[in-house]
Length: 193
Image 1: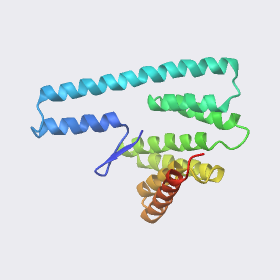
Image 2: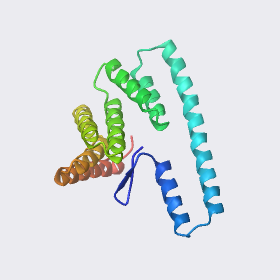
Image 3: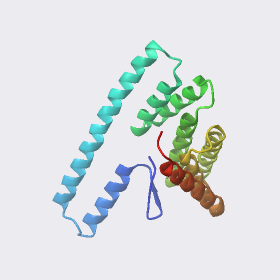
Image 4: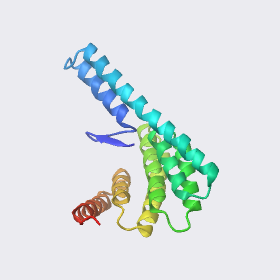
């Protein structure tokens, strides 16, 4: 999961929180004991959620033993791996979901965009700019496929906005951001069925 805070891109929420906590300690705004308490609570919550993802992975793998043609199971499996930051397994399962789907599968396509946005952010953070640019361009391709499949997927527009912003095209970034916001607003205002 990519987190942006004060112009910096973090590869996950945990990294951001730990850096913020370190800054509070360094600036004497929080004592070390309180920091250790917060950090321990955060670590516990993170490990606890991973436990549930591992259980879900076991469940989905059992379902695949019964029926390995279900694209949704592969997509859900990829999502679990993604939340646990097991990127290669996540991408592999998203790709299989796309291949197994009889029609275009917007969720799996958008999840692949997510994976490449994350890879791009990590490469960018590590000063591997050329690699990051390739990842962002691949994310753009997956976002466009997502929109072609299901035009009202707000997350695809959000990722297009992020990618174009990083690639230095603020006009496209703003355009896609506003489109995504409008779609999100329209979907939340629509009466439920």
